Image (cartoon, rainbow, N blue to C red; front, side, top):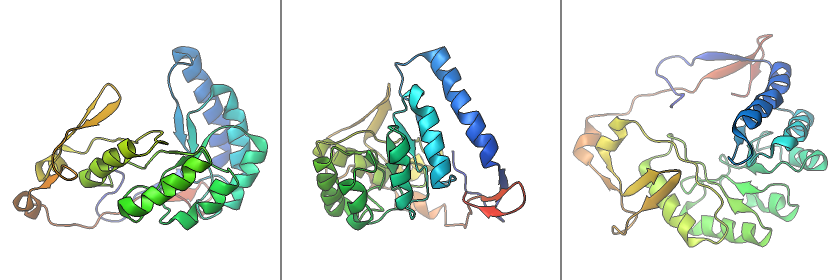
Length: 235
């Protein structure tokens, strides 16, 4: 899965009212069919206003989500206060954050439950250790972003990092395309829902520069989103 494509960005359309009516029924069906013994996570992709997100979180409570991700835009941290007033659904946020100061208020006011800022966005291992340490004081766990827009180097570093902190929660993992594995030689494995890593020196990922030279950079763009009335909206 990689939503970025070459050329002009693909346009998608969005209707929040239809979304809010659909999602609770979807999770009810999943629970009815598969029961309560699997973790369910949902990424809102910051498409809701605070009151819409509060409604969504409240209506999803009976289905006991592992987390609700990015229910509001990360820049609008005050919106998380409103969600907390209405729901106990766990909240994960921060894949666009960069420093501990993006999180400090969210920690001290206990507005979130999982931090999403990955190693490559969060100032590297040293700075992210500060973030995780502060989060642990408030019983907030890690849940680092791990989509395919981040390289195998980032994932390997994240696995090492997760093994070193006591408030590890979850590591997002999406397998890279085969073409990526031609360039990056990795030492981690994913089996039965678990990521493991061996004791290779350093992070444990080697870069084949000759292979990399065969794939020069080409620009790609994420989609753009419009509401059904044509208004530009958060993708």
